[in-house]
Image (cartoon, rainbow, N blue to C red):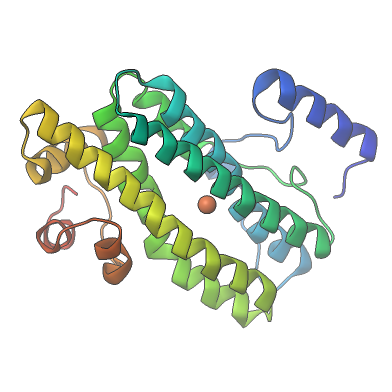
Length: 235
Ligand SMILES: [Fe+2]
């Protein structure tokens, strides 16, 4: 259901105060309604979900830039540049959502990505391992299927937006890989073992099928890391 302009204006106001808009309403992921992509509302919900990921990604990049002291200047420049690109992604998707009759905030959403930021707020090494190299790297794996699904309902405009976003996201994950490796070197840690240990400790059993191998390699994963992801039950 579309919301009135007064309600939306209130959301914009609260965004300034809280760092996020009053809408969308955030719910437990298990309570998100399942809708068919072929219906108008299902199509809207699907694009809205991607829009929400991009909104959260703006905050994640800014949080990475402002939360952790003592990193090289390039670290902060990298994450500010990521935030700018995530804002572009959000704007592209919000405009597309408008073009199909909805706006950001018209559907419920969940905070799975932001939860991981909260869980890694005390250590930049764990943040780089678990947010860019796990949560955002999963985006590299699933985006090709999302593009195919959008094409299946003839939404070629959204498919083109996601193709552009995928290229940018490879660079974002690569930035996470770069600073993860830098931090491991600075702390005298072997990066592959450290990555595996952090992920296993935080997430336990993690699904690792359907890796987008070429995108992950371009994003700074090593062949042996990918073999480990595919071959292990723990990562
Ligand atoms: Fe993005």
